[in-house]
Length: 234
Image (tube, rainbow, N blue to C red; front, side):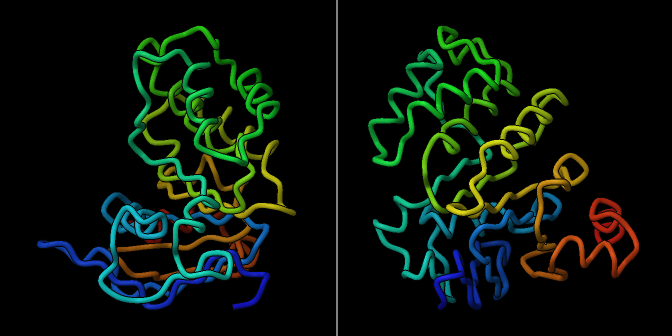
């Protein structure tokens, strides 16, 4: 593995009792890029991300994260935002930030404060009073306020209001540090996120059926990534 690769996946497989979620995935992410992991619900996107962060144990294949086999050290270098938030409802948003900061040496207090302001979150509001869109904004802050070299977002736009989607997209654009970070975003909301992606992976029933540089794919097929997504998964 070269130093220019943030993530290398070879032949990754995962089988549940009633479904084979991943059927031998091969994928390489260069450092400094934002990739879209695109596919409908049930395509294996969440399982793939959970394998990378150690929440799910794969049945076969290999993973290298920032040049190393998965370990406690590589886990500390990943900022992961799950699809279902695990925020404590009784905390205020500021308490969530302060609590999270205690777990990570790479937490950046100033960036967290800037993001709170940009995301228009009131530090005194309890999580229980926030809309789903507001909770999604808070989840993103917990990832972007860290200096983690690898950021994994699992369906960060699922079921949230358009204004929150726009805020999250703009927040990623403003805060992503291409010289320090790599990002993989799982989503089926392609129209809202296409502008973010340097490259995309189309995942369907545990198999990659298309991947490549976003601009190259637009030129090759003569259509947007969103239109290509609709065609592939029609």
